[in-house]
Amino acid sequence: MGIFLGNQKKRFHEIIIPREVVEEIIQIARQSHPLEFMAMLEGKISDGILRIEGLVFLPGETSNHSAVMNLFMMPMTTGTVGSVHSHPIPSATPSSEDLYFFSKNGLFHLIIASPYIEESIVGYDTFGDVINYKID
Image 1: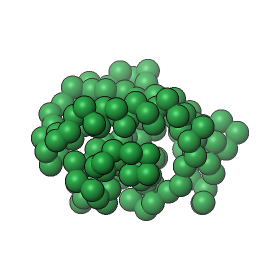
Image 2: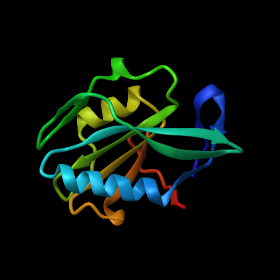
Image 3: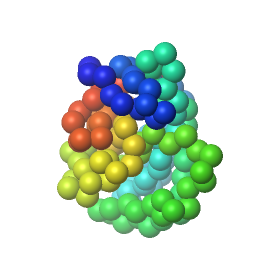
């Protein structure tokens, strides 16, 4: 994996997501189906590792083909580093709208596709390229 520019100009070469956060993403995606859900990923970069710490939910709107958040309502104190959203179809390929959002809102993004299992979660960088992560 390459080196990515992070918050406060810190670099990271590894991404770790706690199992509890992955299980929460799976549960929310299943409960939201057939609608999409969307949240921001909260995390920190330390010692070259981007650690996802949790999810930040903002008001917005969802449908069976899109999800929109009101980013202007995000508290200034959150350490958001990217986003997660679901696709109620068996494809985690980002749409053109997803790619635009990725480019403007963080370093690391997840899409979880139906059937909403650990193996259907794909990570992407700011440019929409697939990026590996570890579940801890």
